[in-house]
Image 1 (cartoon, rainbow, N blue to C red):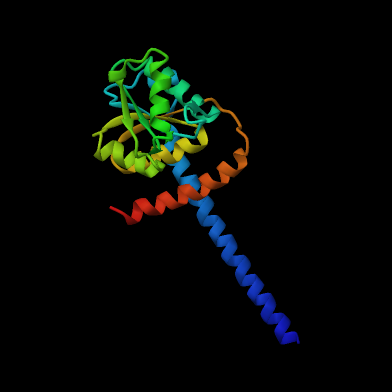
Image 2 (image 1 turned 120 degrees about the horizontal axis):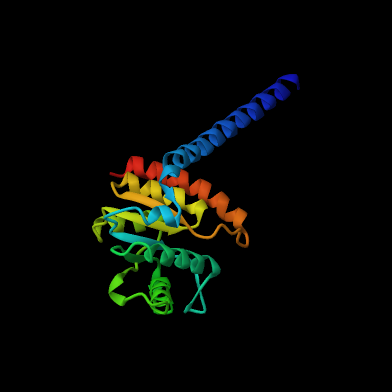
Length: 206
């Protein structure tokens, strides 16, 4: 009986050690990504001083009833327009999910900008931004982005800028309004795991 209890304690201790190591790795990678990218996170005023910017990329989020941006997406678009208004040469790159004609984030994002006075020629659509990684990959390889400003919520911005810079884009970020949306804690947890996923993806995939 004593041997069995000792064995169980050793197993539980081993499991605990594995959990601690995993947490250290997960949180350590997150800390590295945030430390490496935070100096590239700018205010709108600071973004106005950047030169030779190709695009202001606004990352997609959910739309409602097929034609209305969610609160999160509207905040991204509003901030993207703020940056656009101080970046006279850069185009808006709307990157999101165009699943079908009934769900089209990019169309809604573009229309939002057009309704606020942006010229149609100044809006570029990326309908295959299914993930943050895809958006950055396509910005570089499909739209030839060399320098761009990324707009999304701050919790998401570190990963977006990190991916873009690892892909060779001179990327900066401007955060949308700092709002705690409904179920934000779930997004925060997913983002921690997503940072680790993309960190290793960038290491393993040329």
